[in-house]
Length: 441
Image 1: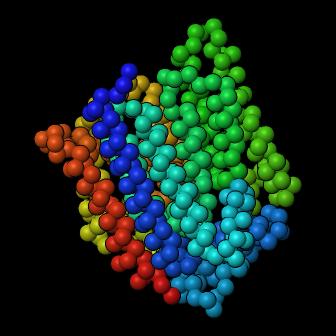
Image 2: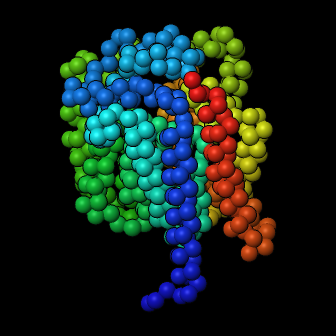
């Protein structure tokens, strides 16, 4: 059966729009990589020093007391990282899993240690994240290309996300691997072959070797296996769960186990994630108990919500450069409209049974990690929600699209595109009106 002319036109239009989104993202991301002053992406010096350590053939670094000097870090941030203040001692990311740094080491060597080269590597990985956001939503709703484009545009143009993707750090690879895993398991109605479950396991193993945020994929894969049991008779469900779980989790375990064993050897039992050593080294960070005692519970919660919202959309540098309040007010209004529209909408994805549940779990587990981390330290940084940016972007798009149903049909797509065009423009405003003038030494 051949596609109709309208179907071909829709396919061509979708492809062209996706290409334009990717070109715009890569262009804006490259501008951020070039123009953002050195080390003015959170934790960038520590990530860079990890890459340098690996590139120089010294193996993998060990996190040591003194690698996090809060007093020096505050001084160098306040001075805007002048050349006279070296970054060599900022090594507190040495506890991180090694995959990103191993992949980045050849780029470091080929470029002579150029920070821009590492930043552009992250921008390129971020472009694949944008593409996968589109593909995931297409898999969920093949008849809703507008939703897929909206989710991709959201991932591409949230200003804070662009700023992070343009830094030398492991977030870009972590988001990419997480998106690849979700892409493999997202279609609950189609069968998954044994080979695909093994592929999921390999991707999961790579994710566990990249960043702790990818651990959210473990319960998501387990949930996908559980949800798929509904398609099997009661008599063989247990066998199917054991088989699928083994195919997915055994490769991941085999890949991650050497790293965990190494951590136990280096840091001692039971510190297989190096998190106990990390907590000991970064001692001195403010805790919720301290803030509640200082500000009171009400003010603590207010700052929690407000700062999370602000830093999700854009609070640049090391959280020291917020946007003008009028931008946050507009973003709050649009976000509220999207939320109301999402609630208003019954469904915008065909045959949604189980699919919305997976997306909801993706957001819920990511939010849970963020909340849990803030029980330990005061880290009101919305960027910690970025691993779930694709489903957040889908919900955002569904909500705004619902409002466009009040318009004549011919105006709807153009009206829906405007907020995303506005976000892309805000990326440029943030870079040239806030980041460059406020963070340059």
